[in-house]
Image 1 (cartoon, helix red, strand yellow):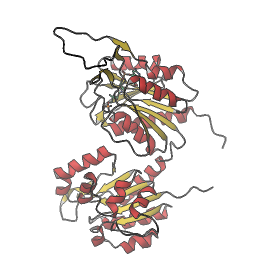
Image 2 (cartoon, helix red, strand yellow):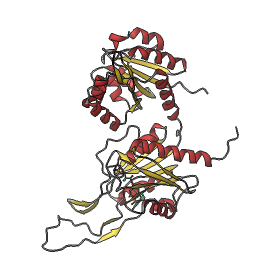
Image 3 (cartoon, protein in one colour):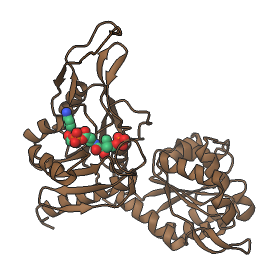
Image 4 (tube, helix red, strand yellow):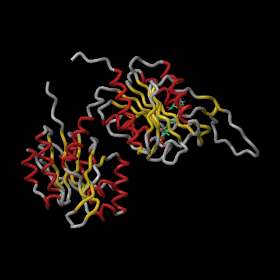
Length: 407
Ligand code: PMT
């Protein structure tokens, strides 16, 4: 049975590069993609909605109250019915509105309701691009999980040279197709991710915990979902929003995380254990707030189960286990020991004392160690990029191990 065509919402905002979006729409349609155009009011001063209607054979709304799809609330329908949302070009204004939750027209309302990946191709004057407000908004959007095709340097419509020129249509076209292809690469695969810290209560108001923000694990969950996997994220307490399309199980203690993971591990094809699970918990939880005592005091601790080691001891055939090692010394030797002891396929070693690596920040520096002796050192990357590289590595490994297909 032929698969249904991929659906892309093409949002066009007010920048001189808007005219190039018509070419992009035409190329996408010719390549078999179903394109649903949306213009902002400013984009419609550069290009006509009629152009996009003719090229895509779909309505081209502008105002959020338009009703081009009978019986449907248009911005919600568009948000739910696309595989990818591309904004080409993305103006300074649209970037600012997306970063600050201002859903004022069809484009921004649909984009903000969308859980499919959103790809932005910014295009603007160099000064506007370099403006600290734009850079802060871009950082926010990166943090929210938006994807970007960076603008290039060159001659701009304002007769200046500099960065801000929207990437070429061919580059954007290729990126859209690459993202669409990637969406199916993990379809049918069940992924279980642990993320964040655990909290081990001491009394009704205090707990033992660590600095994990959950960012690394959430990035992995998001990256696996964007490849089409069915993802469950078992998360300790974090301040992060649940990634769209991912089942999130919230836990607090290591024991709760263990139970939540063991309940789901038998149906998982791949487990990524990015959580910073507390190795110990207070032996007793005081029923009342512990009063301040004069002099020294000590705390008795009981070891928690090692969740990943439990998974390693009951690993199913074909299941892949990917652990993390947060180390402050002997990085690779300690990580390799954990790889062996916990019977893992891969371990991601991070020296959590290195600048730009480890807990809480948006970046990490890791080395991937494989069961087969592989050692892949990655440079400083955002946690999202690290997640992508980990998934690529595990995927290559799965493909290499797969039995040859009959056809
Ligand atoms: O959350 P972020 O702020 O983004 O930070 C990311 C991170 C530094 C937390 C992450 O990259 C990381 O290194 N996670 C693992 C932290 C850790 O607990 O490492 P470990 O070396 O103590 O544990 C080794 C592995 O065993 C880990 O996969 C861990 O999830 C698992 N483990 C550990 C103890 C335990 N009781 N049960 C476990 O399953």
